[in-house]
Length: 460
Image (cartoon, rainbow, N blue to C red):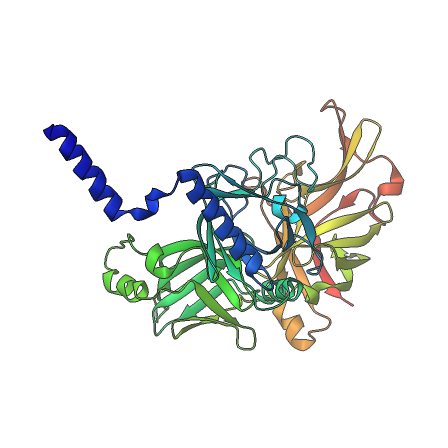
């Protein structure tokens, strides 16, 4: 009899403490789903989605990417950074379901929402990706952790990343145009504030930012950076948004001798760094850091134009650099009508990179524009990693910024064998019988298949 009374009392206490659980679990889940959908649909202009990648995934890209989404009761429309035109959108169905909690699932194919989350094998998938067996680190199914008009918090079911949605205050296409403009304006990878002992190193390609304790150079002493924390970021309309607030990111960070500095940073609950294009600064919580351009830095557009290429001491060619992938690469024409070469642009240094690459084929031969260490014994490589880098001739730029000269210097190569030239080589599929390209229609003028001692480009 006593046991029955204790049991009854216990039930009564639980009921009094949590009356919400009088409802059936299924009813509660359906109410949570309805509330989440009401919130998603209720945003007049839609939502900004900070889509951070699961970087533990071995084929993931780094950092975060901005997406805009707008919901009705059945469909979602999405705009994304991977699309060249910010006004281009894709519409698909979505699903609200349950799995250990309310779930938002983009289970219908959508170019933007599936771009980062679709695996690819040895062949290309529908997004032009290959070799990404675990996709690029994105998700298309999310647990709904919180849904309020001011923010929706999601957690990727596959990667576990926390993804937040914030309501837009303008049409999604206009928003995405502003985000892309910020990304294009941000060309600086180094920021410093000596008085506050802060510096930032920004990896614009991988979308990571490193916050350092910074001691500037003094007479006889080089500048010193002590890394405090590294965080992924996304581009926003006004700058960068970190994956965590400084307060949260520094919660467990300890660096010997830096307790006071870290505590100062930990007082900031900000995730946003404001970018000022006019004076090239990043700022947060009243602190500004000045952008530092490396010596010889040139913008992507500075390089576009016609050049006189100098090689083999006295040989010249008229060549042209044209846009390929904005802020990533150019097409180099003029060496031969059969092919153009790809020249990479390094945003951090504002310089060019000319690497080995395939330029065509004939029968069982692949034609290579191959890196060549002529002065160091004549080794050549079938490699897209080896080649040469550019350096600005500052004196020529100071004399005439419209007609400057860039010098070509050895880039990555085999140890002790710096690349100073390029050679046109044909490589047989069997691995034997390789030689300089014998078809003279592929040769350089004046010097057949050898581009010996590449010296410079001078802009016309």
